Length: 86
Length: 158
Image (cartoon, rainbow over all chains, first blue to last red; front, side):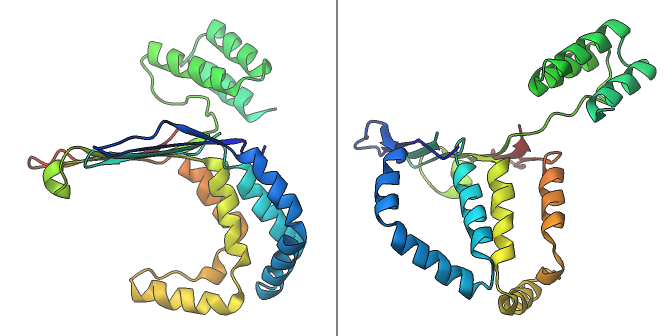
């Protein structure tokens, strides 16, 4: 399943943002609109890497679909960054 | 015969679990919940005083936890890193290696050798990488700082 939401939280000693829920599924709209350009880029990359374009698409799709569950939380000097992909 | 079932029967044969426990494990296995099987076997192995031969469950995430000592980092306040990466992402990521052009392999090999890593990238096949990820599930790294250094690093799969 492709990622649907990303939760981002940034906090410094002076200010903090509320946890932002970014609706990643809405990115499908620009992706669909830009699909001709994306396909051209993928073809160029496939030619440069001398690989099959379908294999390239499968790898990118695999990475995209395995992103949900990723969690990164870093805290240093009172600053905090949280990124979660759901 | 499925591998998990065989392991349960082997544990039973070795006397590490009782027939009742084996039955419960097999029932959990049939219900299709791998996590439950792991929990059952872990608790049973613990109850029997044996830590060996638990039914292996597939790890879903690679966790990296770092708690750095204030004196070591030179930063004010605690420094911590908590990263959870899906194993599936690692599997998908290593497939990217197959996209590296053959011409770049030599450059990579040269750079790795220069840094004391005698590795030939062209000899690493996708199936080797898959195997590497599979074995990563058994990896646990636990590092504790010494001599007053309270830094802790933990790398494990869950």
